[in-house]
Length: 110
Image 1 (tube, rainbow, N blue to C red):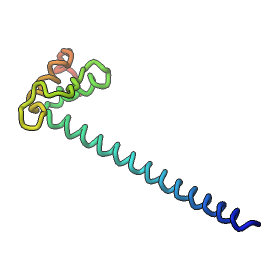
Image 2: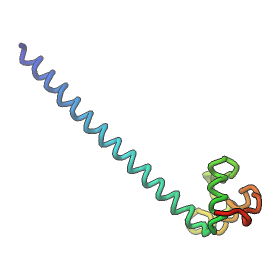
Image 3: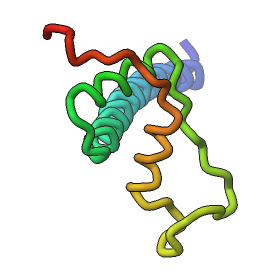
Image 4: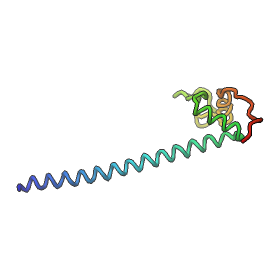
């Protein structure tokens, strides 16, 4: 067979192998990104310092879509002036304000 054709076929084979390796690498990176996002979500929810019942209500509301989460605009509106973000207390108050009032669950058994 022609030597040029052999080289091209070899190059195709090498390129396909590299593509497969990069696809596997990309898959691993996406998995890592998802894990880091999950850790950040957990960290954020835990920083709200809610008791068990409040946290359960918040999570149920998020899953049901009844809790609205304010998305901050590009420009600084109400910030604490330090880094352009709202203080945690303000964010917690907003989250609790936007959560629907729920039934009194103190009588329910766990």
